[in-house]
Length: 114
Image 1 (cartoon, rainbow, N blue to C red):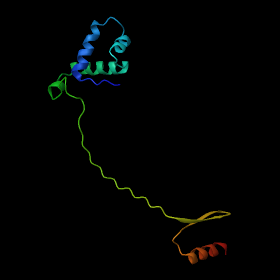
Image 2 (image 1 turned 60 degrees about the vertical axis):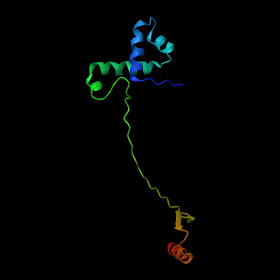
Image 3 (image 1 turned 90 degrees about the vertical axis):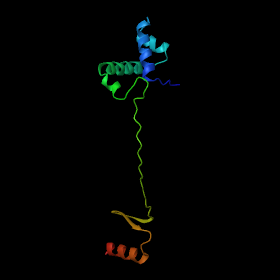
Image 4 (image 1 turned 45 degrees about the horizontal axis):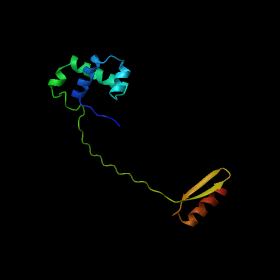
């Protein structure tokens, strides 16, 4: 099960790392954190410390880094399925719409054989 932490919780957890005597992997195992997540959060915290104006312009240690976006999209997709009459001939295939009149199909075939 995943554990979600706020920015403030990550900051506190990363500060605890300095008091932990084991390796980063052991620290992550002890706190049930993926090592990749640990490094990602450590990088994000370092970036926030290097650029503190991000925090002053609306981000706080407890705020989410996500932005809510509402998007409404309406898609209309129409597929038409048309029944066909298929004739297999020596040189290929002839396909006609099923609603084509029979005498028209006969006339086309006679015209091709002439």
